[in-house]
Length: 88
Image (cartoon, rainbow, N blue to C red; front, side, top):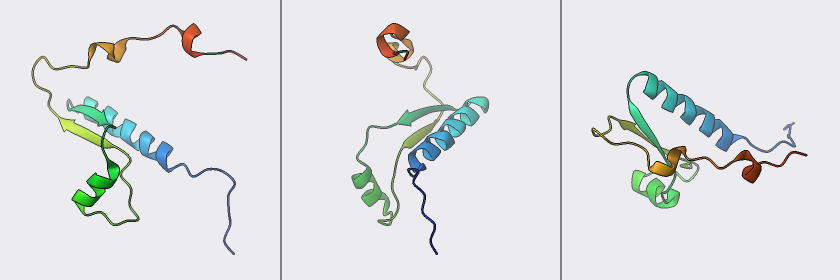
């Protein structure tokens, strides 16, 4: 018979792990990258002609950044842990 599992499907987490390894590998090879998460997945899937059973969960830009390009200033700003973490 078919075995079921009470755990949630980990597809998003798995995709994030793969993307992280791709970004780190690109950096190791001297290639710049950027995780793009602001797009319409349905429009993009249609434009790419993907079948309905496939889902786009992220985009990764890979290449060489223009000279002087870098992350936005807020990229490395951090809130104090006291504002974001609660110890139980």
